[in-house]
Image (cartoon, helix red, strand yellow):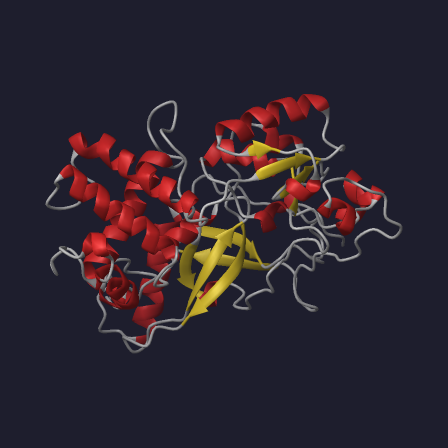
Length: 393
């Protein structure tokens, strides 16, 4: 029921909101901190800063041992330089491949934000950075530069090379979509065009799929069909972080906005949100695919980025999704076909803790004119408010 949602059209960018909230918290704990300053040393607030750079130490050592990067000097290959390079890549991607990018068509898809967050020695960021350095060497650049206009096309080419190497290494897998019988033929035609445009593929059996797409009356509401962005109003806490320095720095929470891609996840003081980190939602038992609503496909056309499956997960998939109603035999599927199975898959998604649910909060920016009411936590048993999808009251 949308009457429970507050119009947030006048709200400024949330990054400004977050910074203002942090400033207030810092001043309450440490009055010596000026109101226009934020201390260094906290990765959530200072990407590419000193504390963020420390997290690149192991990755830096791994890159130094790569044969193709053996001649890289310490000025271009060190933890601080890597932190700034990754932040530069993210910023360039947001500006040229994100929702706000200029032009009528994106030159490629956004790389998943999970790649930029990785710090493992041989993980996806390692593969991506090796590709970036190889591209820089082939172009004979002295330095990476994401501000120079004439470098735009070559920087896009570098990102495409990173994408190609990530796919080859198995770190980037595009969705393979199976359309359930609950999706109408007209919808399938439209959704197929979107899937193909954004580098996904259509498969003929659930076993082949990474995502089973079905129609859900609560998620696939009429307003989601309009070409507009969802309101950033509902959020959930992903993780908590307590900076060790400086003294008095507030605990931070990484929050995810429902129906916005992971690249829009943001850090804010945990005092402003429900600090409990919810259990990770898993795929249905018995088949290695997410069961999501049609909106999962529609929203990629708005953001140029595949969203978080948890946002679109169909909770009562056994009742709503035709292929689960018929039953899936894991053995039969392993042989490449569907089969009726008496007693279909019984596992259910579990949203929220036993006493959890939506927590209504008002986040202030420090000025009376900028107040925002949000709801955090998983959609479950929120008195007086119909869950936006999937749950029961």
